[in-house]
Amino acid sequence: MSEQIITITIDGQEVKGTPGQTIMEVADSAGVYIPRLCFLKGLTPHGSCRVCVVNVNGRPQTSCTQPIANGMVVENDTEEIKQLRKDIIDMLFVEGNHYCQFCEKSGNCELQAVAYRLGITAPKYPYQFPNKEIDATHPDIFLDLNRCILCARCIQTSRDVDGKTVFEFVNRGPEKKISVNADAKLSDTNLDVTDKVVDSCPVGSILKKRVGFAVPIGKRIYDKEAIGSEIEKG
Ligand code: SF4
Image (tube, rainbow, N blue to C red):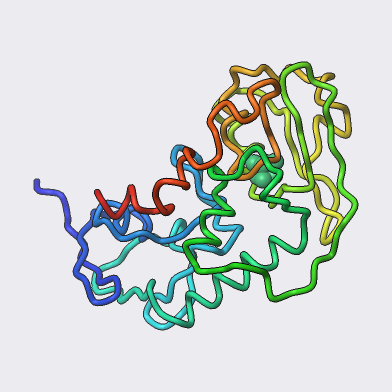
């Protein structure tokens, strides 16, 4: 029996997929980039960052979690959606302490790259300059909460890929933060520098020690090409 084909439109372009696929999956296959931050291939999508929100038949939905259905009309590239995404990114910048010019992740940072892609040069909200913790106790890895955007990729990767539970969320609302095995220190955990979680962070919150600036600024992933261009090139 042949597999059922589902047809949707994204910004007027006809895109095909199969039952169970999400809007983001079929968009990726069709070379249509939908910005995202908490989504990481191989992990269960949860749509918490809201950056991948699109209009589906006139209503906002997270494209990483929304399965496709025949006849869906998806809007991704509109001024309204773009402004929504810019507002989210602006808020992420002011809620943390992101000093891109001093950050080892600059040029490889997905938050910075999405901001550039959306044309953000400075956030429109006032900076909050919060006090955030740094944990440098592990011999090979830093944890710097100044840059954390609470995407949960480290929690999922440690648990679902590495088979450990090194990271977790604690507290709620503005006090919510990433913690390590119930407020222990990174050096108290079984985190290893070869664990996949170390490369899962979209920003510079989880970094390897002693490899800073091994690749010079100007030669990093998003210094060369805008984020999403790998999808658009197919
Ligand atoms: S430490 Fe990195 S991966 Fe973990 S929640 Fe913060 S930004 Fe996301």
